[in-house]
Length: 246
Image 1 (spheres, rainbow, N blue to C red):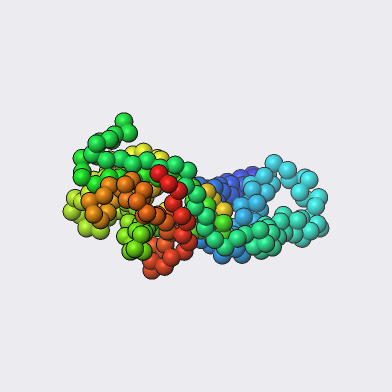
Image 2: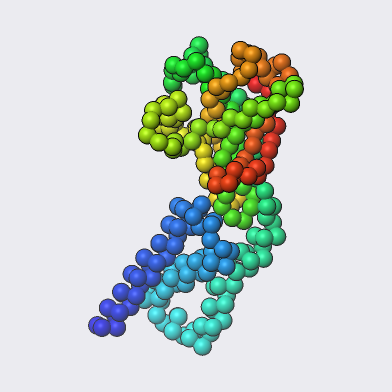
């Protein structure tokens, strides 16, 4: 009776461990992707071995007959994870980010997309983009839009953030509040798991195009646009991509 109880408790504990690691891997891929490759392989093996441990009480005879082969079985179960994370993944991984613009939408006080009404004097530029993290580790990036005029002077716009500094009501916080319930929009910083692609609409508040030109007129008069991905902490430029015409 005591042996049955011990096996049952061991099986339940193993099941809980396997489930916990599985939730981390599949429900928290950004967090899991921040871990070193060796630790990721170890955690995956913990899940595999815990799953086998949870099944042990149901197959006591077959597993007991293989006791002299336990070392071999251990290697068979654990080797694939180390091979994948330490050999395969680094060999197929490109250390970089990719951004592709799919389409563009401009919201202003004279237009509506049927979801929100913009009550400001500033146009709201919401290009649909797709960002791919080709690296082996999770990345966190801020999205910027750089507008370059014919004189090579630039204006840099940061996409609306998920959280603003301070508690005061600003244009940024108001626009974010109106759009935040829609899953289509991306707010800085964007978090990407390894080899993950994320699509959505970045939100830029165009506040200071010179000479009184509208945003679309400025782009049609020799202005060019460049999307930039920057590090949220230090602001270093990670990658840049030309903006397609509106």
